[in-house]
Image (cartoon, rainbow, N blue to C red; front, side, top):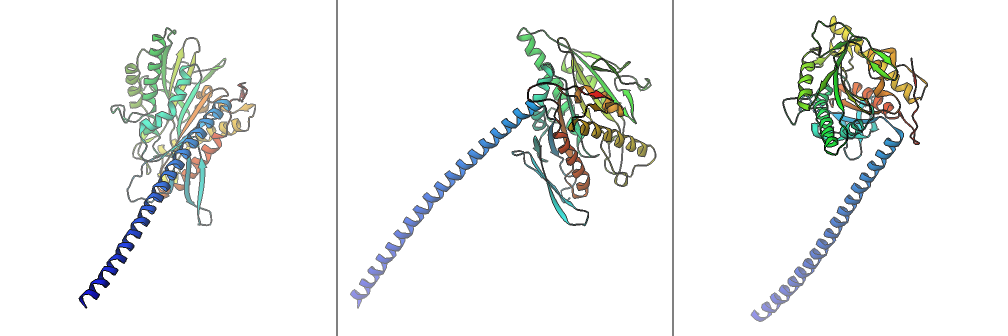
Length: 400
């Protein structure tokens, strides 16, 4: 019996050994298959990323040839971690998706595709990386315009101005000025004649133009066309020799800007702020950096009295900007620049041949979905505007 049991035990053990060996071989095969699958997935991911880079590069070439307005959509971080978000963006594809309620109350998904898109985790540096090529084109002689557009409280002022005292939190204004003087020093080092940098800082408040570099008691200004250039007689034109001097002027103008607390923003900008940088030399061109006041629904913002009047002027001037964009999109001969002080002031930066970038700022909360949808729709229409033609010829419109 002992021998018989031992024989059965050895046979069972041999069978187990065979089973273990079979399982080991299967595990090896599965491991190899997984490694091959991981390698194929990694290769596919690299190919996809390379294809997306090539696509973006080709898109950049098309924009350069056609002169389209470039759009960056930036999603502001939510005010509360518990707030329900209705919007998402892909920095790789430039796609933005917004979930909102339709007229009959059903939820619908609206999709947009822009030149660039950044989610709420993006830094000020990430934003300026998309703007810097346009600043470079300005330094090379092109007229240019960068403006932030969106509802009140969507992060426009943070994007454009930021915190001047913090290196990482500085906005487009400060970084562009740094870039301009860096280009100037590079030109001088290469033996290229230097240009003179002049800055003006104006605000459009209730459709009147104020000089933010002048005392508060200074008289209101008017906007005039002198040949192909916009003039604002009486505005302070400050020649700046370096970025530090330009920053001091920026700080001074920032303190004088009109702001107020509303139901949607504790520090709401009540005017459009326009920092204009002009290069005097061979090209004599201008760069407008614009922090637009936010569009607002009075029912939500709770504006009344003075703030209600401000909101009405803000919305009218933004509507005039929309009319200009629509006329440019339809390639009309008559562009209604003169319908508002804002569009009159920005005419040089919004005409054919100019380089234009719109920084579209949106809030992620579901309660702002209606405003965000309107903002994204405007940006989509603006992106269709062609400010040039593939053969490089410029069409100059007649302003009205």
